[in-house]
Length: 403
Image (cartoon, rainbow, N blue to C red; front, side):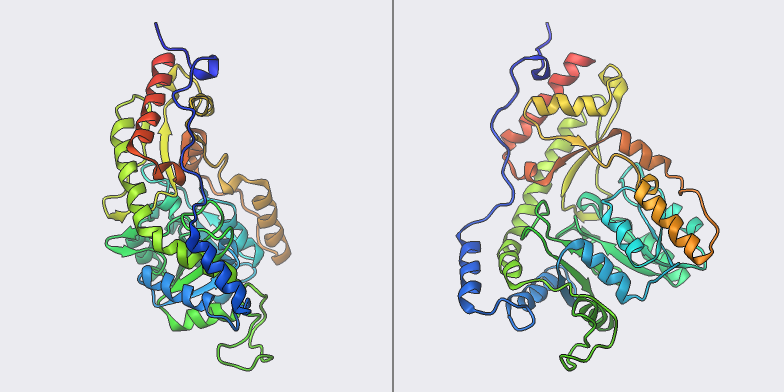
């Protein structure tokens, strides 16, 4: 006789919570108090933001860092620094948070969506070149869930066509591609410090680059169009204020000291889950590209096969797992290429510029992942081996009940 599922009124596998997020200690408290008592709370005059820019850039093997208000702003800062404007096109992935596409649209550019690879859920380089037009100015890969995109292929395509590469590394703190950390593998790269991210101050962002020129341009965009080293009321370009505050940087400097250990712990727990969950029919963990030295595991990803669970859809499996005490959910519900706000704004830009209208880019692989892709948040992977075993036990329990 099968064990009764919790969703049917049975006893759940676990009732204890997984590790909470964000995590902090007295070190964050001291950093905040020191900043408070310093009386210098503005980054233009303070030391915390400058120190964090240097420390975060150095940790990611980058020469320069320019901090800003959040990861969404960081994407927009890069595009504005690059001079990307109305009617330009940026090739990106349809499977990511909407901010990636919004940043393009907010500067008047049109996002073009190349499909993803089912093996990594990242931008498929083989789909990029078909979308390149005379209007294309940049490729914007996303390191989804902390898994680096294929930067070798993407950078090679960009070089052949004279395009910029702007990395969306907002989920990829500390991730490594062929021994090098992401964020400055292209021309510029963006990170987020929003509350769910692998280090956080509630909000915050940064741009990394190895180019002094790009760093200066990004700094200008962040600082109301001033020139670095210029007069306070001298504005060399049109821009807004995207500055990070000293409070955020003080917290992030402490958070950064834990990143390596936490990333390695996530990776070790993910490796255990990869092996254990793959033994359950119908659950296919998304494994790293062999060239990935270290995945940041902002999310743990699985591709679900309904046939192995009596035809029940992925969302129903996720509900059953949550009832067993496992925080798992469907990922992005539809490709960005199909989201109404993206489609409408793209059409508006084309209409204003007198450009021919175009149907949304087809992304069948992305649609499949939207229907069957399951996530667990990074905080789960900070748990113990016993916590990971509970995940596997719950999945086996659901499989036994429904197969």
